[in-house]
Amino acid sequence: LEIGCATGELAAMVRAEQQPASYEAIELSPAGAQAAAHLDHLHTRPLGELIAAKTITPGFDMILMSHVLEHLEDPAAELRAMKQVLSPSWAMFIEVPNLAGHRKLPIDDNRSHLHFFSSTSLARLLAKEGLEVVAAATDAWLDAHAVTQKSVDVLVRLVEVPPTAERSV
Image (cartoon, rainbow, N blue to C red; front, side, top):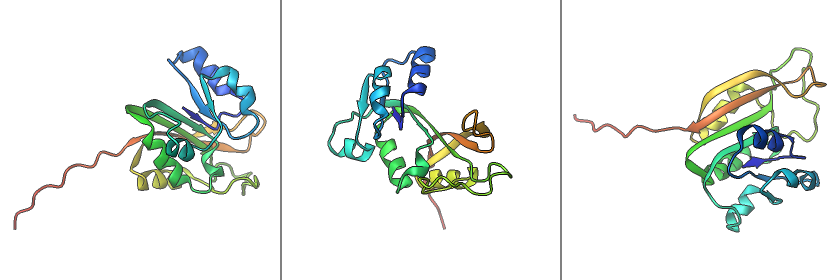
């Protein structure tokens, strides 16, 4: 499941290189019409609504979210929704602009960004939602012409909480 697939470039690449059994995506903008050719199914409503309406079936092995989380009003709620649709053996890849990314970019002037993450703040948000960073990178460029803005990429998993040990006094 890709959340925020835009025109479907990532979907086309993943399908060509990895050949997944199926590829679904969510895109709320008109760009989704262009992405539909690369998808098995295009959803045009937010994940929380799809879950509530039972329109989306749990069991996704992978969720991809690139440059979407910073646009959401409640990123923690989206992470909780994402956890609801994952299969038992899953992976989640999240990429956001790196607030601490480059000395030539003192601020993120994209007015549609509601949240600003560093690798630390993203890891804290994930931990609060019971997710753990398995791998992280902060050297990925947003795109070829945005040479001053780097991204934070993380691969996450559920945190396994050990059972509480019995205590004797």
